[in-house]
Image (tube, rainbow, N blue to C red; front, side):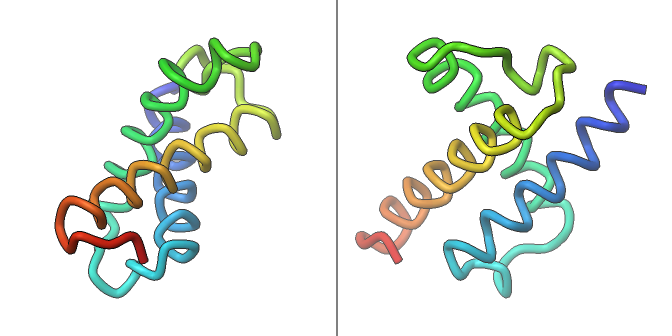
Length: 89
């Protein structure tokens, strides 16, 4: 059950992050889910130890973990845009 919840929440987080970074037209549903999950992993390993709290990968889904995962997804998309285009959009 946690896997299904992670996929749904990851998809929503990836979709919102792609809307923030204006890359929604280039991505499909699968890439939104991947960006959301990888962004949550990135946030869980980098951001969460700095500010405390639990990662979304631990099964704790609340407002703090969703916002941290969204921040991780936006950072991931910014890094991908920087590598792909040379500028952050």
